[in-house]
Length: 207
Image 1: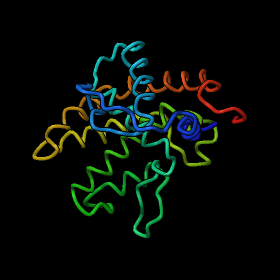
Image 2 (image 1 turned 45 degrees about the horizontal axis):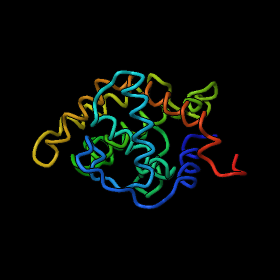
Image 3 (image 1 turned 90 degrees about the horizontal axis):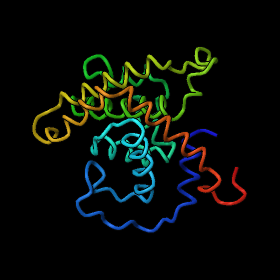
């Protein structure tokens, strides 16, 4: 089962009441209200801090929020071409993000696209390794090395937008770029936890 489908099924099985505000909660998730926030935040924290020793609440919160966003599979392909069609190939996403030679209309748009590419690369590499299987050339899926290169580069570019409204977030994206491989490993551990607890998370009769 694809991870995005697993996340969608997990969303159906968890109570959808609005979670209580966590006063003083560290990191990126402080203002988020997604119903899966507590579940994913705990899962990411268990893997990043408990198993990898990656003690960065902002990174933990950011990755948990990313999982919440991609629990809706349509959000994986938010990048659109000039005709409004979703772009599904990494190389085409990279071209679209180029404000000079691509279709990004501004540097702000480049930042938004690069942020999405970083998220996409991190999610696919960590949560969807079968996309990099033996048939990847035929299906034009990226390799792990290509995902790492695109993800690290994209988060680094986002970190260079470090003035005005982007100043506060810039250091977070620099750390995401620097620790990209560890973040991938942490997500593989999150995936394993989701698979191990599938029977508990999914409602009866769902495979």
